[in-house]
Image (cartoon, rainbow, N blue to C red; front, side, top):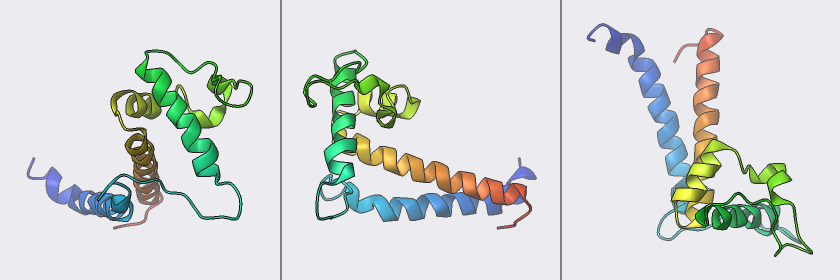
Length: 133
């Protein structure tokens, strides 16, 4: 154990630094109250009018113990399960939107999880190609 820690200490510190920076960046989405990350634009916001709406419908379906096959409240009906952006069978979405009651927090945590995966994956790829911390 003593020999392993010094060997990987730089990697552990780098990964913790990445996680800390991501946490600092997304901190305001959770405190003092949960809020959504949307960009102001002149028309409709894709994040607010589509992405969050589909994730909200996913959360409601999962809370009832069902997969969101059809969403009757969107237009004249919408095949939500076959819409790829909702990620109805993506394991992190299933866990976040099933077990976290507030869909805004689950939506924000999915962003944080995406960026953590991206940051750690980028670091590991750079290590594989020979870059050092």
